[in-house]
Image (cartoon, rainbow, N blue to C red; front, top):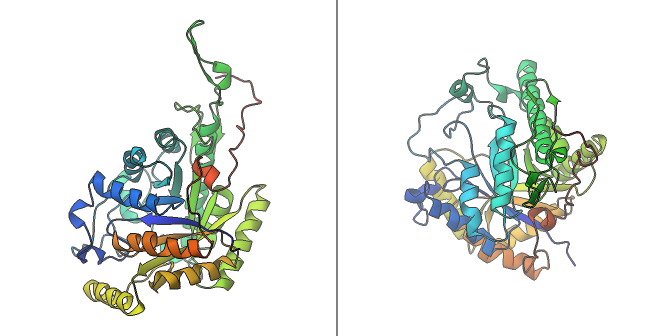
Amino acid sequence: MTRPLHLAVALDGAGWHPAAWRLPTARPRDLLTAGYWGDLTRRAEEGLLDLVTIEDGLALQSTSFVGPDHRTDEVRGRLDAVLVAARVAPLTEHIGLVPTGTVTHTEPFHLSKAIATLDYVSQGRAGWRPQVSARPEEVAHFGRREPWGDPFAAAEGADDEAARGLVRNLFADAGDAVEVVRRLWDSWEDDAEIRDVATGRFVDRDKLHHIDFVGRSFSVRGPSITPRPPQGQPVVVALAHAEIPRTFAARAADVVLITPHDNAAAAAQVEEIVASRREAGRTGADHVFGELVVLLDADQARADARWAQLEDWSGRRFTSDAEIFVGTPQGLADLLLARAEAGLTGFRLRPAALPQDLDAIVDGLVPELQRRQAFRTAYEPGTLRDRLGLERPANRYATNRGSV
């Protein structure tokens, strides 16, 4: 029997190809409506997927890493991912909801209570994808940091040590932010709320804790204003498409997303991540998901034709950090099972066009994987952590009886 896979879908606008909004199956007028996001998420739940991620950012989408591109032929503008997730939570029952939350210009205290609130609203299905914010116009939106140069010169293999230093600092701050958020989630013990009408005690003050974090860029005392989330710790998911973010993700995340283009690269990155986790003293499941941009159709010729139309509309060749698959659901199933042999436990798929390629995942890929006994046929009850085989973590402050 094939080991069952975990599957996630990355939701972003009209899809990951910038020309997808022009397809007749697209819904460009609905992109900023709650109904659109509810429909996508419910559709993913019909496919029994583990989770959806929702993209976000602190500047308008751009084809340039160093500033706005001023294009008017691609989707621009988006809703807040955490608020979208909170809106669709009551419309779903099982699927995990993992919004992107940027850490560079956002206080970790605010992120901690937002994701904790989402975990309550969704009854234990929340996650969080921390993301750094490096583009110069994002810095200018907030005005609290000195402007910096182009950090993307620090891609693997670049010689710009100053840029690499900037990226290292961004991810070091991201690591501190995740640590603060996790401590704040633990700053209330599970039974801190007494709610005893007879004695008039609502909270046991001895079970609320200062976290007293002091880092390189900020300090946070705590405790949170939101009680410990239903999962204890909502699931942290991080994208690791280069060496520096891989180190961050291995140490900070429960699920690491990587972008290999063959089995050898996948195996090497999985080994690197597992080793980094062990060095950091982390135990438990080592979830590493592979990333793919996918365009699916009934046969190869139709898939190729649709991709060619998108490329023609765009006027430039689409590129991605992730592998691009254009073909049939059966062909994608072959590829996923082959990649899984490198140690991947699942995949996050980026639909090239929404809702069309999400429909193809639900109606084509999932049944194909089920036929091969490689994907679930029903949801089991439980939280997102339960579905991923992650234990509910013990509260780090539960044995410390120092009150606030």
